[in-house]
Length: 61
Image (cartoon, rainbow, N blue to C red; front, side):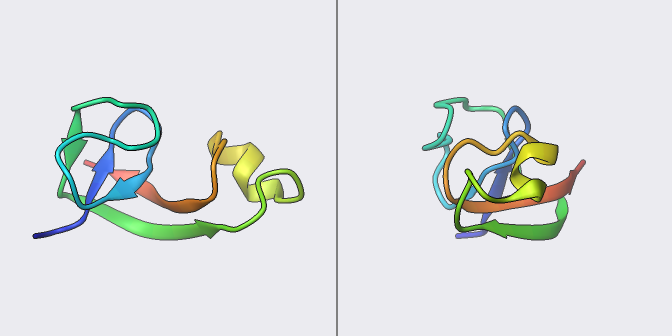
């Protein structure tokens, strides 16, 4: 099963429902990857709107 990126929050997961925002609008066509470990200290997490630790897509088609 391919990893999918949520079109709402950019979170990358394996299922058909985003575990981060519970959306079902996912895409297998994404590029770039950011891994957020600490959302409180990460400037990147603020830029992409990440609220939970995990993998996030940079570009989703």
